Length: 92
Image (cartoon, rainbow, N blue to C red; front, side, top):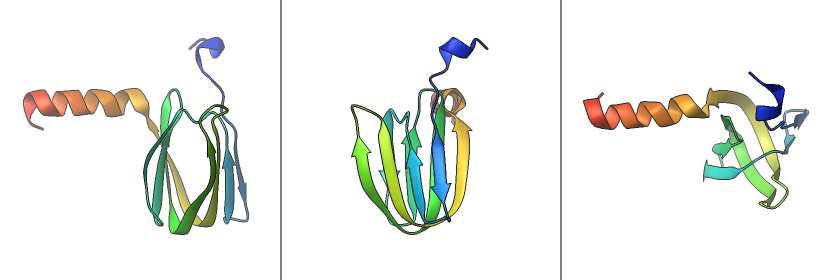
């Protein structure tokens, strides 16, 4: 994969209680237990307790979340989109 084709993002987690992330294109579902965000190529799911979005700037793609963070999961955005399309066509 060409390095120029990927837009970089940086994730900083401080003591499992404060997360800073840049390169965010879109904010998905969120509540006090789970936050889903999208970068150019990935979906990130953050799970924990008492999660709160402190800052989200659409223009710069900066996101800050506070709370107790238990897990950070990356998923390939293209596979998520393709799975949804095939599920609708084939009913799986």
